[in-house]
Length: 201
Length: 298
Image 1 (cartoon, rainbow over the protein chains, first blue to last red):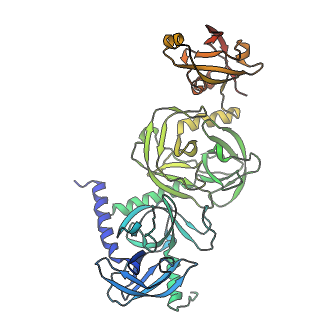
Image 2: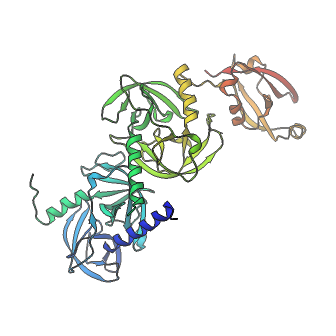
Image 3: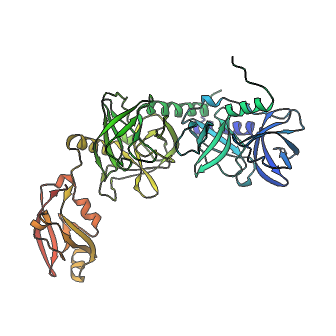
């Protein structure tokens, strides 16, 4: 008879296997500088601005291949960057909505902490907002997570229990605490990067 | 397909949301506000003693977003608990977990409201133990240590079972480098004392002491290496009335060995106030027994 823990383990393994196909490593020369996520099959990668700060950049895929990347958009204020590689049919991540996040819900952070490729760590959402205590001053909303983020997680996806990307891992603020850019902010950033103006409905 | 992971995630978020309705922001210090939670629906709030730095002009941030004034009912530094009261605000009192239901390894959430919204971290119950005495002399019904991360301003907030019931009050100030949870029976005892008397009764002797090595013969007789050397006696105190003087060494108190100051502190519990106990003391090198009537700490 399958126990709950058995079931949990099986679900986690399936989830990780699915999502990790969209996790890439961003390299500067031969050095890994962070993580990134495949957003569009035609070669659009999202990452943190501080990961893609200077080139020449390459994007390495889980299957071992790598491609040169150019910076499509770079926003240090929101700490976001969009990279483009010459590819088609890349496995994209499913995108969720960060405005639906609730404190206490489970999340998983993907990335390459200290250069360990394709590592995953878990925790919960602490809260979402721009005015949470102990936060650097900014007008931008953040997802604060009770997850052990480390150097190398930056630019990688934060996913919910259904494997949907809800934020981008950005910085660690304590041993078990970190901050991530909400995916709704990422969507707005990409719309602007593509030259799409937001029209009030 | 069954989705246990998603169910667990949803249940955790639901527990935060439900228990969070009783969690408030406590503004009683200059830096970051801290947390507290409703004890009863008539406006009694429990929080941590150490987050109350000013007793005037305390404000409480309610889950709905309003901030209201609160008065300090009382505080007990020994257990790091304080009780506040808000007028005219009705808060849902939380559902409490059965103390016996809590086990090492259980998933638990720490909740706080240092800002507008309720925040949460997740961990497990790391250690459970017998009743213990805090370094400040407070009696705590049970030792409970979770491994939850305490976000800034989380002290005074509740530890909540993954299933949503409140287990106790979290504080980082009682033990260095560890978060401990004050369990419900201890909170109840302290809240009832503070509501009734404004303070928690503690025994008082009126001496300052330090550990001192006992003479070999006495050490052997009592199987006790150290006693407590009296380094000062407060005028008019129970100690002075019992004729204890500077230079005396306490060996036993109420029939119990006193090796370190904590031993004496533990024996001066509130229920002993007004009772007379025997004290064995080395006076001028000779063992004597005196009777001391324990006073109440002012």
